[in-house]
Length: 329
Image (cartoon, rainbow, N blue to C red):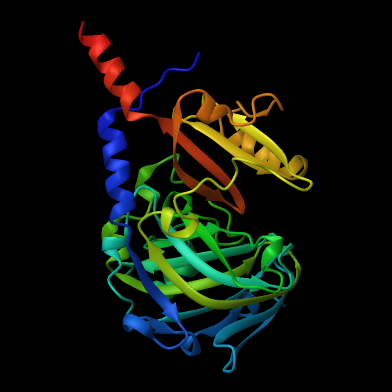
C-alpha cells in the first residue's frame, strides 16, 4: 500500500531549493571563476600498475574543449580491464555552497563512443594524498577521500555537447582499486557520501574510462558542481509524454514515497527504472496518459541516473494541508 508522506514544509523547501540553485564551475576551458583549466588536465593510464592501456589528452583550441582518446585493455596480472583517465591536481574553487540533497556534478561532454559503459568521474577532497586516495579507493590504508561514480553519455551526445548530471548520492569513497566498482554505496552507508565540507576542499578531479575494455573518445567542455538538478533539467517535466520508440512508464509507491514517470527504451532501461522505483514500475495505460498528475501530484524535479531521466512528482501542498488538518481532528 502506498502511504503519502509529503508535507507542506517539504513542498516549501523544494520551492526554496529551486529558487536558490547554485552552479560553481570546477573545470572550464578558460579558467572562468577561478576554475581549473582544461589544458591542465593530463592523461594517466594503467601501465603504472603493469597494464597495457593507452591514453592521450589533447586540446581543441578552436572549439574550446579537451579530448581523451584511449584504449582500455586487460591488466595481465589482474586478468581484468584496466583504466585510462584525464584529470588535474590543483586548487579548485570552494564548491560547498553547491551541495544539496538534489545536487550533483554536472559534466558537459560529447562522445563518439557514447555506448561505452565504463565512464566514471572522481574527485578527491580533504585527502592527505589525493593521488594515493584516487589509486586506493579507500581499500588501502589512509586512502579514503576520493569519491567516484559511474556516468553514461546519451546517444544525443555522439556529436553534440550534452549535460550529464551525476547526483552526489551516486558517489562513494569506498571502491575496489582493481575494478573501480563501489564496495559500499552512499545508499548503504552515509559515511561514504560526499558532504558540503568535501566540496569545500576539492583537490583532484578525474574523468575515467575503467573496468570495460574498448576504444573510447570523450570530449569535455566543462565540469561544475550544482546544488539542484533543476539547473540541468529546468522546472518542466521531461517525460509527461513520450514519442518515437520510447514507452511511458510510471510508479506510484517509490522508495521516496513519490510518483515517478519516465520514457524508456528497451529492456535495460525498463529494468533500471524497476530497480530505482523499488520494483513498482508499470507501463502507462493509454487512457491514463498522465498518471502522476491525475492522482493529484505536483511535478517537483527531473532526476538522472546513469543516463536515465525520470520525473519525480510530490503530493500537492493543498492535499498536505488537508491531510494534516484531518489528522488533528
